[in-house]
Length: 81
Image (cartoon, rainbow, N blue to C red; front, side):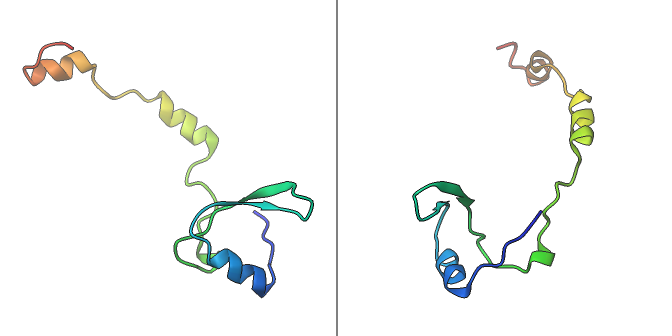
């Protein structure tokens, strides 16, 4: 992911925000969204890549290890819904 270094005055303003904002240019066109971190950290401390690739996530979705709700409710003595 690319990064942009901002001037200290803008960094100060962004650091004081309490929630998400839309960043706009001087003509009022939306450039993107900014979501401040709760605690400032160094870029090298951030985890910017997802823990799993899209392919790995799709493989995990295929695994079905749960039990049907009727079986769970039966074991609890609650019958079917």
